[in-house]
Amino acid sequence: MGEKFDVIVVGSGIAGLSAALAAAKAKSKSVCLIERGSERNSNSYFAQGGIACALSNEDSWKNHALDTMNAGAGLCNRDAVNFITKSGPAAVRELMDLGLGFDGGNERPGMGLEGGHGKSRVLHIKGDQTGREMTLFLKKIAKEQKDIHFLESTMLREILAQKKKYSGIEFLGNDEPMFSRSLVLATGGYAACFEKTTNPATTLGSGISIAQKAGCEISGMEFIQFHPTTLHTLLGGNFLVSEAVRGEGGKVVNGRGKTIVDPLDTRDKVSIAIYRELEGGGKVFLDTRGFDSGFFRERFPTVYSELIENRINPEKDLIPIETAAHYTIGGVKTDLEALTSIKGIYAAGECANCGLHGANRLASNSLLEGLVMGKIAGKNAANYKGQKIMKTDSSMKMDSSQENAAWREGIETEAGLAAMKKTMWKSCGVIRQEKLLTQGLAAITGLEKKTEINDSAGSLALQNAFSVCKMTIEAALARKESMGTHYRLN
Image 1 (cartoon, rainbow, N blue to C red):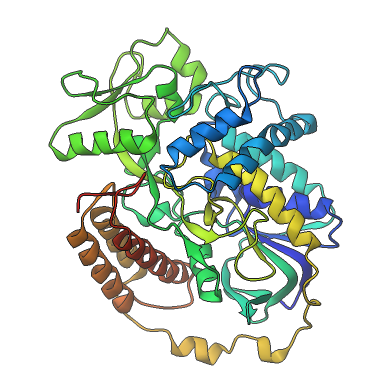
Image 2 (image 1 turned 180 degrees about the vertical axis):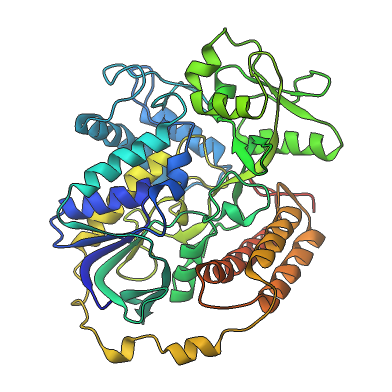
């Protein structure tokens, strides 16, 4: 390939798109945005709940910051919280000025209430399609920019960095590296490493693993947010039933119809209550039968359609629910400039950990973080002077003979992936124990040694996922006390 750009952005969710647009706006000569799949493979695209932002006269960024700090269980970076919640209103209004419309109209948009929020401050688009509409809107604008070049169906394999300085990246299936002055990682999280998950199959934390191998500092990997209300579908997998359903009055009840937890509590508390009820042999449901006729269908069209497909009418039936891995707080550690521990490498969105969420993410703060920190990452990456863009050097090319020497036969990739997911759910799920964590780490390490390695995308993704799983369990073992999403029995 041997191409050269001023800024490379990896990932096309809201953080990646925001970064690319900001870099282009900063008069960077050339920006390359790399997509492994499409924007539809990002968590941003599937975000139902909305975007939290203190826009109403009855609210303030300080109230939003306080709620964020309270949800984070004492581990939030106060400066990050203040910066992002304070920057939120301007970031959302900028989207409005560009033409993105929110429910209720942009003059006085409707504000929803969700768990952990003291005020109604969550904006929505088409009910439960906020992430989808924001992602498609930003993608359309990015496609119109002449300085943003899209590279599709491309998978990051390695980051080139020596002596804590970045120089370029390598792709799967390409012999020559791509060079740039700076790099923005917006590759998403790792919740698909678990058997029960609401995430797209590709969210296995590859970007985090690759960054760690390049020398980037990683933090907070033990903190995985398990969404309390997901539907185990007839086709298998877990479908997210939006947090906003509880915000609108949905109740969490057991098989006897008794409320088992305050539905507006933070997600960690609701998830633990549901998990314990299920582990005890009971059943748990979301009860929305008290909603006005037609309200559920209008307010949550995507969820309504999925429920009907699964033979559940939310106006008449209880909705069976279970917990599932949904959002990962840990990742590549950054400062408030989105800079990692390696000069020239920036990170934003779910693959990064700037300290906003602490030990537990406040509902609907993720789209806000991606929007604000993506913009910061792109702007700073564009303004980074760094070293001159390297010329293509034959010595930098991948030695395919060395790569092939590392290949081996073993457990097939799909089987290894399934075993990894089961192990992570059993050993490092909602409620954790020392013995199970230790057993899980040994099992993942064993799988890593026995699973086949080849030049396929699936094999590379799985090897990176093994690394992420080990980092996650090791962090969970190291943190002895329960805190936020990390709940230990011993």
